Length: 141
Image (cartoon, rainbow, N blue to C red; front, top):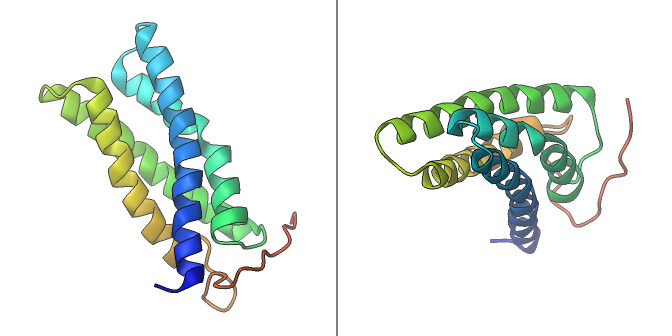
């Protein structure tokens, strides 16, 4: 594996841990307060949105902001939201403890996200993501 891909994967993991911490933190808090697991999962998942998009765009894939990427990311989040909530609900329904169900959903979604972010969400104009170690300056269009 090239150094730039190793860096990208390591940074993806760091951003993912930060996002997962926000997600799991809200989930655990709400679940402890009596909110049912699927609803607590949904709130936790949505709370990590800004951390995940910004971190992956700027730090992992090192691409400038573009509306098309944000629209693709929102589509991915919508898919992930449905998958996350469905996985947690399904696993809890078959008897798995809620926190284990949530962790399982987070692992499945992390794998799916890396693949779709690198292949679709953060693709540049030329069909590639940044492979070098120089960050692209963020823009706001």
